[in-house]
Image (cartoon, rainbow, N blue to C red; front, top):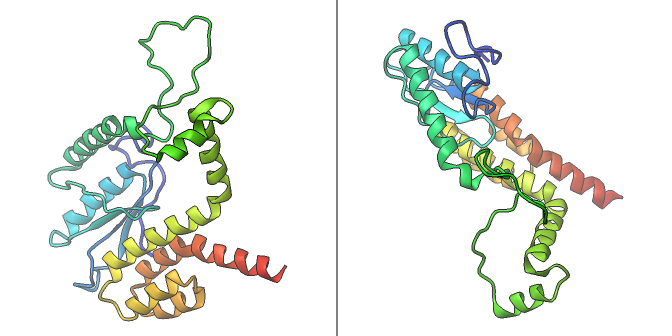
Length: 244
């Protein structure tokens, strides 16, 4: 696999971590659907600054190329404006990340507990970092919640925490399956064995997925196998549990 070093950004770029969301990892392929011999080659992988810098250099050498950039874990496609110089690209990237951070602040998994501008709190119940959202339930659900110790909010938090613990492995597997499907649908949708490979993926058939993806471009197949590892790890856990 021909990849760009995923370490610190090259000289002249922004150092890793100085822009919002720089802890995310991206991966870029030259094109989708095999339109040329280089169409499915991995050309960059790493933090957003590293990938954007490498892609600008790639386009200088391959001006007709049409790169596709993915979040390396979720496989969501990243819309990246690569026009102009490296400095232009990085300036737009920073602005994009700032907008994403600001627009997603209310939906963050770990929202800020308080703003630095807020006055100090007096005595009383401490902040828990909770966020108010609307929840729609049936009357019998509200009746049950209101009868729980601590009231509806405490009961709901306990139920959610218990569900997170009990379904952590299943959620990880489902998320991985969705990520693999998004990636292979974009990069191997017309490749031989695609439909059979997808069926094997959702059947948690590691051997079948490996076999049916055998004719795919090596870089695409390697990344798909990496993404699918949690899916097949879950299948092994289930098999071990059944044997026990």
